[in-house]
Each structure stands twice: as structure tokens, then as C-alpha cells.
Length: 423
Image (cartoon, rainbow, N blue to C red; front, side, top):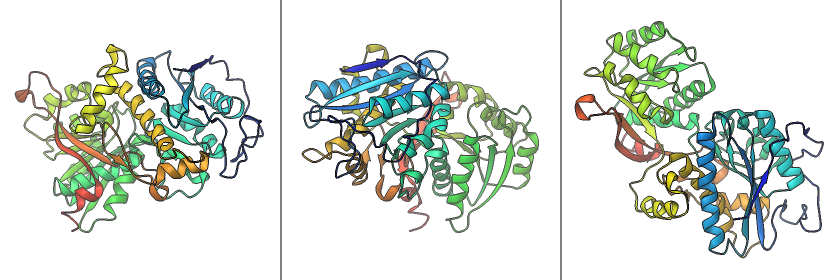
């Protein structure tokens, strides 16, 4: 594979005056003002993509396998002749999870390297610091290793609104809406309690949940906020308990979720809960399983699923093109997914002119199948991330030697979930 390694010494580069939607520098080899829009980073024989991700420091255990999966997919494509005769050239910078270094790397990629697309933009702090920069450039940006709300758009028509942004991972706001769909359809809830943290994750989950509740007849909600990382959430839990809700959304990521669940159990609440996919891990189930025994169940959403024939076939290809230590590594698999989504846009343009404009239109022309998950539809400017999620439950200690999660519902979207509720 043609991989260009760039040293992460770019933090001193200033965002230049050419930070315009069209990014209009040009060269004989890479004209940038062709009839279909931006065409930099692509020739008859190559297409150049890039990202920055943490491959050193505390987040290297995530960034290293993520890149291994992406590079494995690129290797497979290039070995088969590329796409429409073009080899994929991939440039990577280790940004160490540092927003300043990530921003500087992005400037280098677009203005100096003149890449065609950013693929696999990595990490909440870096993405949050650069998403406006991406929109100003207008460069196609496919897959983000985060679910922050700044990526969300339900009908983007301009780059300023996020038209050039193509998220794949769940966005918390979308996930909050799916939580409500499960609450109403699977758990027949008509009064939902929402306990949310005052950080971006909690507030985005809350926002999506309330947006969906407002669309449903006969469904109401009660909410309570807690500080992220709070050790005492008793007042919020008491208010939800006293409201006599019939189902609870725990809109909080890992640090605070167990505290909320444990307090619900301590106060004798017997209503089932649902939480974000971020919490569906062995550590989280082990943290709460003893407290909830015989009182209520804790459910969590998921977006990766191996049950389909597509997933089983993809797993064989994936494992043949990554190192053995990544055979079942979820982070590496998400890197592979990033490669799939990027390549799909190019495949839809075989034999046609490829520009930024035509590429983004191609991504929107039909839904795209996540090989390890559901379908994502970018039509009409929808930038919602994953739109189909499954449901898992914390396994009671009596049912297994080790606490964990068991899947109880397959991948489903809001419309399919709510069809029995709103026929």
C-alpha cells in the first residue's frame, strides 16, 4: 500500500487565508476549478486521502488498531487494482489526540498535500476543534471516530450546514431518538424519565430523545440533570422516582452511568433503563450487575452486528487483511468500515468525472450498507450517522459466570420500530 507518513510537527502552522469553501489553489497535475467543482487529490491513476489520529499516548490503543483496519481495507482494494484504475494513497499524521496538532495536520493535508478527502477523522477533541474548518474547506469528510452533535444535520444543503460531512458512527442526538423509539415500541412506555449529564454527550442524547418524544402522541417525559462525573446523584434520581415514570433513559457516558444506575437501585426504583452504546462494555455491566439484581434491567444500544450474511462474509475478508491480533478488534473493524464508506462513493462514479461535488452526490444517491451493521442513508442532506441500532441487556449473574451483555433485539431503525405504534 502507498502510505505516506508525515511527522506530527505541524502544530505551528497557521490556518492560512486560503481557508475558503472552494480552496482554490491549483497546479497542472491537480486542477482545482474543473467544471464539476473541486478535483484536487485525484488523477487517472491515484486518489489521495488522509487523516490524523492518535497513534501514541493514552489513546494509541484505539488509534493504532483503527488505522490498521483502514489500511487493511486500502491494501485489499489496491491489490485488486484499485477503483476505476486508481490506487488509494493514504497519508496519516499522529496528532496525539491534541486539537492543535489535528488542526495543523488538516491544514497541511488540504492546502499543501491537496488531498481529495479526509477519511476517519479521529477523536472528540480533534473533531470538535476542526469540524468548522472542514466545512469551510468543503472537502469530503467520511467517517468520524466520535459521535459529537456538531456532525448532525437532518437536511444540509450547504457545506456550512455540514453537506460535506458524512458521519457513520452513532451521533448521540440520533441515538437519543432511537432510545425513545425502543422505549415506546419495545417497552410500551408512555412516560419516560430522562437523567442526563451536563456534558455534550448527555445533552445531545437528551435533545434527540425529546425531539422524538415530541413526535409521538401520548408519550411524555420528565427530566433531571446531573453534573458529569458527579458522585452524588440522589436528588435527580428522587425526582425521577417521584414522577412515577415507566421507563428511564440514562443519558450519560461511562464515568457517570454506573453512579446513576446504582442510585436508582438504592432508592428502590423498579423501572427498566436504557443507555448509550458507549456504555455497552464488560466494565460497565460488571459495575452495575450486582446492584440491579431482581430490581430492573439495564439495556444498551449497539451499532455493530455480526449476524447478517454480509457481516460474516466481510469478516472473512477483514481477517485476511489485518494482523492476527486485530482479528476481532472492534476499533480495527471501525477503521475497515471507514474505508468501505469512502470507497463506495468512488465505485458509484466508475467511468465518470470525479470531483468533490460529484463524489458527495454519489454518496447521497442511495443508502450505503455498513458491512458490520445497518444501512445509512445520506439522501437530502441527512447527516445523522448510524440510523439502525440493536438492543442488548446486562446479563444477570444467575444467567452467566461472568457479567456481560446479551443482544435481545436486532438492528432496527426508528421507522421500523414505531410502525406498530404509529401504523
